[in-house]
Image (cartoon, rainbow, N blue to C red):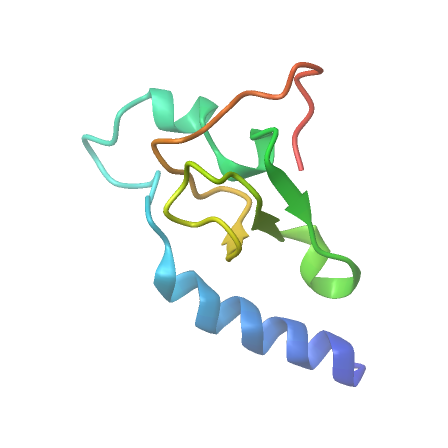
Length: 87
């Protein structure tokens, strides 16, 4: 494993502790599955190892503006991408 891969896994583990939403719990609203960061028009993916799952929020209306977010997380300021892409 390269140093970049090891560093990416370490970051992934640390950053997962700061999720806003967890879509694997009973009672989670169905809409959360359609409103994930990776599908938001204001989500910009990182490059390298972390770019597979992580990106920066650039939505000035979000509490997470300027922060790294997991692509499957979400927030109330979600704005769907016009092209319907994800990630």
